[in-house]
Amino acid sequence: MNRKLKTRTVFPDECHQLLRKAEEFLAAAEDALAKERPTAAGLAAVHSGISTADSVTAARLGKTSAAPDHSAAVLLLGQAVEDLPGKTAQQLAGLLNVKHEIAYETRPLNDTEAKRLVDTARRFLTWATVTVSGERHG
Image 1 (cartoon, rainbow, N blue to C red):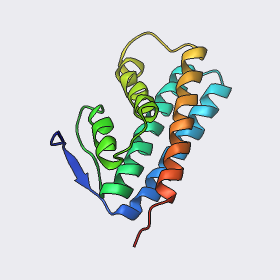
Image 2: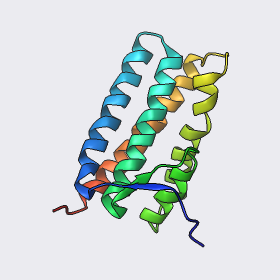
Image 3: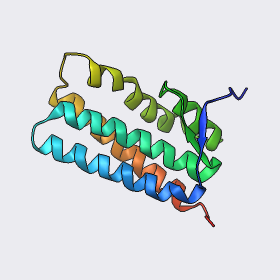
């Protein structure tokens, strides 16, 4: 059953700008890791994941999630990609599940946690880049 999700309409070719944002956030995450700033790296990795998901839903559906709860992005991604690999959905969910903790809780991330998040964001972005490149836009 498809749950009604709060979305915003975008032009499908905006997926490329969203991919560039995801790449920029990932680069920032990698830079932060190199400078031993794990909390910044983790949050940038999460934002890379959000932009990555938006790029795919923009390409496939012409919309992105506008729900205040980022977990709705996983559901929208599942609507955009019928045969969404479970591992890919888990990558996005894993990134989104730690967003609040990283941004608002007092405990900083450690290097191992940050590296895992950056690696997850990189794999998710690689999958999305291939997925979006297969789309034809105006």
